[in-house]
Length: 367
Image (tube, rainbow, N blue to C red; front, side, top):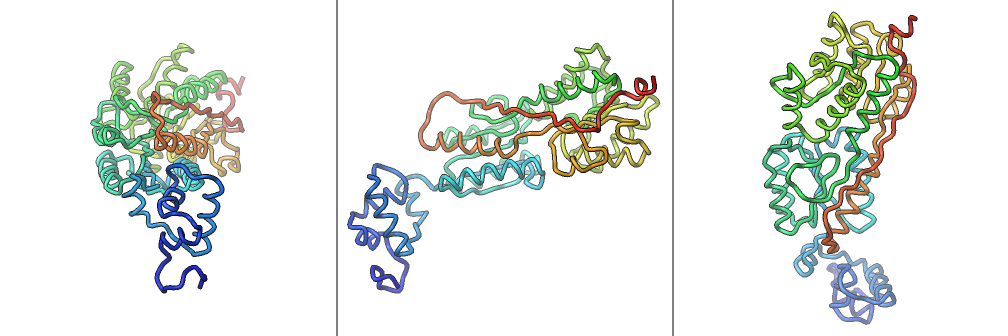
């Protein structure tokens, strides 16, 4: 037992103050990371606290400072490799700043997101990082209410219409456009898009497609817009039969892409916008005895280690997952510390990792 701590209970803030030769208020400011404390005094307090084995009472600290040193993280699917990478960046940055994180997953369901925000506000988190499941016309009062209470919100991966707050995203539209344009440059005219916004009434023409886009999750809509941009630039007619609108799971992606491959005029290339869609495409190609590159080119979103060891290796769009998470956490911490400047939109670069799964369309290869 430390000579400065003689009783059997946990060391108190008074004992830390006595050991450091300072007042209780100085110890509270030092261990709570608020107020003004000289470097020399801070060092004495931290040394005394460490020697005594003092553990700060988080609840008491939050009552005196209004800060719980806790971030609320609401992600669409923590099992998704993309969000796992994002979470790593958030967690590392939060830990370095002395913050804990409470992480909740919504499975892309807006009602679960609303519940998650309610729980986190009750936990008195200092700020929120949210990958929202809200479409463009959905009610997002749960987020605006948090902001009205003074809880900063940083959106990650997707924007939310009508919510004027910080965000960290990539340029999804340009990433998709450039990937599809590279397929077109290789002679592909029939390019499947998997997957588009989920809807019970798939579009039958371009006008209806734009109506669906108005309701879509932001990232889904932006990637589909990029696909349409590339077709329009090349003068290629839009074919609704080449865009899936299935629920976001591997089985439905396999079925939908299989249906495309069975068309009288099937696609010669497939552009997938998420990992599950890429895996679904691989299953569908195998089921229909189509070979990547020889029969069908493939470009996917969200590069993964397994993509590089496929045969042939897959050309993929790489998102800076960890960096997205770190940037979101850093921006949130700045707001918690009192920055009240105008909302910032951070746009991080994505990279098309060229491998071997995309090449000339079959008709050109045969010439």
